[in-house]
Image (cartoon, rainbow over the protein chains, first blue to last red):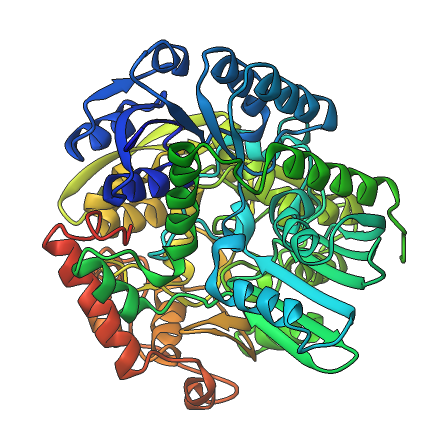
Length: 328
Length: 284
């Protein structure tokens, strides 16, 4: 395989980002896309994608597709991933892996039983600054990291959904806990849980305090205390309440301190990068993860973060929900 | 807040009619943005207003808080997220989604256009209608949002972008048709280039006059706000304001006004949009 023949299922916010990147990547041929929105499919056609489908089942029947990106709402991950695995397609699945642990286990098993590769979409692992932090840890510059603080607070799906200050409608599924599986911890907190597991290994115990400022049926903020098997303790904060975006990790080791931050986008820089048709800096991690996924398929190596990682992250989130402490 | 409301009503020599039975309060809800952003009316401000109304008229008076669905906002979620559901329980007031209310059709002309507007029953039946807007910047065509624009949210039709080509005329038509009695601006926190707490409470019976004052505070020339001029021409109010209380210049000085950098960025975005490049560049 020289290039991966790819299909994208779901052209919502993240699906469109993957579509744009796939069209630029040298190791991917974007063959087909599926979405229920005819407008989204028209845009895909205009971007030069040959095959467009209103149902993903049709896309999965295409024999010239090696792999699919599943960028659907969380509650649709299970059914779609199972069908993709059974159709023999390798899978890049957006986080969280599923809305509950049972469905997540089903997805991992289906990928294994059908011998397809399953990679989870956690783009932060492909961010340069977070990589540098891992290198610092590995080189012993920090000593033993005793305590880590990780914060990921954004506006979430409800409080700002546009780059141009004009709010976009929130899809209905976001309002239903049955469909999302959870709130801010499930949506953004899971990113830092995955990242910290990458740094420190498996979680021994996790407890949480959940916040409900906006009276949602799920948490709009969460503070978690984590103890890792390796001995490191961590405090993570996830939230959906900020009219902005903050993602920062601090490590305090026995020798030194280091931190990494996912830079917020600069409008002017982004505009220039877009005008020159290059990938904006804040989108680079998404671009890199897709490039890596395609390379794993070409080289027949196992991608990471894997489906098992996705499952462990989800189990940690549910453990946090189960072990929530009320401080009111 | 309560004292601020009482003081502002005293300044305009407003007294509540004792025979009032049904009150409608129209706060500004915009998307699901928290009141701390300055974009939406603080439910605590509305709570203070409810207390004033009940003290001045009667503790048993019926009060409805009204809002309607919009293209990107569902009322039932906005009421819940923004704290109005809790307010409704704590203060025993009704929350009315005007998009689900019974309506009557009214023909209204404005700026040479004839509109058929749906008038919600809850507003028709109210004998006191209070507009509780915010002061904030808006899209270039509208420029600013305050009392007159807040009434656009009383239009029960959810896909409000349908009215955008004649937005100024529709704002004025709705104000003509619904004829709110009193405006009290929740200017404790305002939204300019950033939110800021300026502690302003301003009241008027005249939505045009209060918008003129608000536009001056926000650093916008009222003459360039089209719907404001149109509203004055249509007889909704006057642009010649008589101001009482703390001078407007005090609030103007602390309002987070647009600087040259923001203005240039906005102009650049308008240019990009006009050239049709915004979608291509992923700026929409």
